[in-house]
Image 1 (tube, helix red, strand yellow):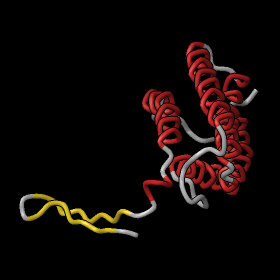
Image 2 (cartoon, rainbow, N blue to C red):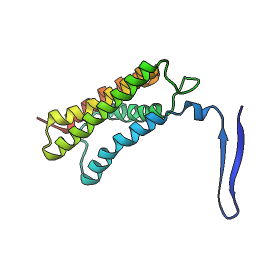
Image 3 (cartoon, helix red, strand yellow):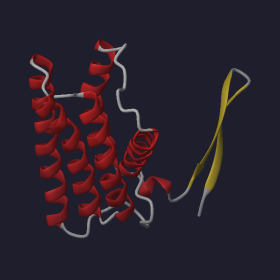
Image 4 (tube, rainbow, N blue to C red):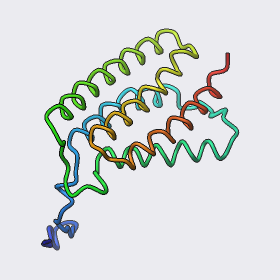
Length: 166
């Protein structure tokens, strides 16, 4: 069942929205995780605006970007599921605490990398999001997220190694 409504009018922009099963498919935990992961990335991007991607493989760059976008979307929207949810309390606990620990490690390694960049720290910063996406996909049994997290890991690690020579 879906319903439609119109917000706005002559005094402002008009927005048409459709409500259906989408709110049940949204993953508020996944949205929060993505938001938190983006904070150090945004800070890094602002501080290093002129940084050049040294990875010359168009295929690897495309693989990384497409799979990154897919992981972000699949963390927020549970595609292929009737509604967002966990099959058991244990799945939720694993999802919640595993995500919290990986996010904490991510923040710690960003701080360490900011103080003294190294190839090992950069590689760790590339692998942690892959593990986080994979954990979330497995805990939710959202197999498209699992597949795209593996693809993202391959692309992201290759790009990171290219951008952080020995």
